Length: 304
Figure 1 (cartoon, rainbow, N blue to C red):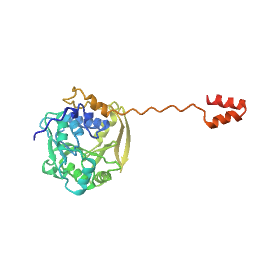
Figure 2: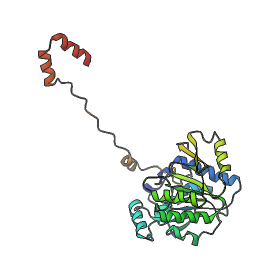
Figure 3: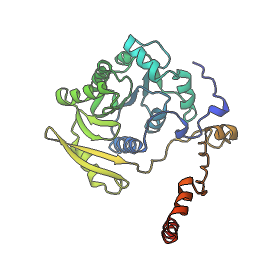
């Protein structure tokens, strides 16, 4: 498939130029878990279900090793499989196209991932069981779809692999919360830690990872850590805005930005507020006329 080059004004100069929701805290955790897998020699592919404009996919691709595959599944601008899903796509992702994703991705990497354009229900037709070590689930917010995505993650992860579930606690995504906690209480998913947006979990043993995170005080600098307990099991909670790990570099990083575009996107300075008038009101003039001079002078001194 041929991908057209984006106009200069639309080329991402940095990861921050790519539209999407991928906070610095989650970038730090992605980096920690993916580098740990490399350090321990854990093999397997990477997968993302739901990619939007590619922000987290671009970041995750930096941890892809030789002979591994990175699979990205998204509807992009294809037809949704049902009306509820179609309504969600129209509301939240009306500007999303596969071309936009691919142009963003190729600004950072020479080759595209394996792209499945369609509903995440087709992922098992393309990704084998026990093949992935890290899966990011950020597709539909509808309970039925998320429950299916979690089931797909369970079957495609290698033993000890990690799954990241996005929007597990947002007020506008109760379906994700329902599917997530159902997986925890009835399907064997073991939470490792929570952030504002994401739950990190495994169907293996989370305690060795948790012990490492708690022991590394230098790594936890800049973030707040608390230890929770859910149904007798430890869960870590991280918050704050730690320094980002070094993001991938765009091939357009050194291109000059369009000054006119920068000026259009810059916040407009608020109009100056006129200083209140110092002219005496009718009430003040009347008071000056009828009150004794000593009272008038005291009032003026107090106002000054």
